[in-house]
Length: 316
Image (cartoon, rainbow, N blue to C red; front, side, top):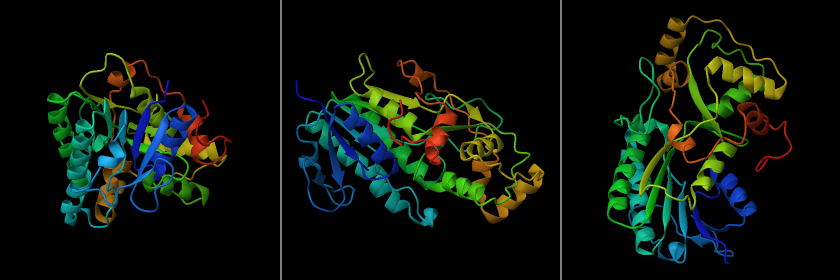
């Protein structure tokens, strides 16, 4: 029996490299959609992702599509709405429509918990059933793509699964995790000692494990939304301490009053206020109901992320 063919976009990125490694180890035939370079093996160069991308060659003969590629960071996000819409919304729609026409059986879309909102302060955990209140232009572009995918799933035979992760950490990850780990490694004091929020995080190994788990899942709904995280959801201060433990270092956490820290972040880096001080709890029951459990504990994931464990891709 021939192995299932899986098209992966964003395959050369942080999450994509880990996903391709896991798929390869499990016997899937992986086809990578590349932005540039030369076609090698079964890979396909598709150019920039947008509303006019030609996906015909990429989706031909494919069983499943895992769409990771996205525009994530832009210095002036509020002035780049057209770029986010072109790549994250219109580009996703173009790919999904091509996949449906080609007879692809399932489409897994990596979205973001920011579709749910910026904070769970004063409310319960985010759930898949919540009315979306997307945070920022990035979150709005992902939410619009989800809406289009739901419409497509309602009148095609292609099953669509939407995965909304929180902050994804791992070796070579960018963003806030990289900054935190770098600060701990350099013994930079962090003003987070009194932060007592509750936040969800997920290791790249746990995220890719769930994405692969979705492939060929029996009795799956035509359209499903899944919120995923590590088994633990802890405070920012506790997460910093866990990173330190994984590094065999004790982070320097200053007991700065929350009111002072909040005002300072609002003045200097307002986008960090929710990320560092606010809560972000999520209800993962829909993901767990599929029979999946996170294969790694948070401590195991962090040891892999900071390089103190020997197996970066498939430790389980």
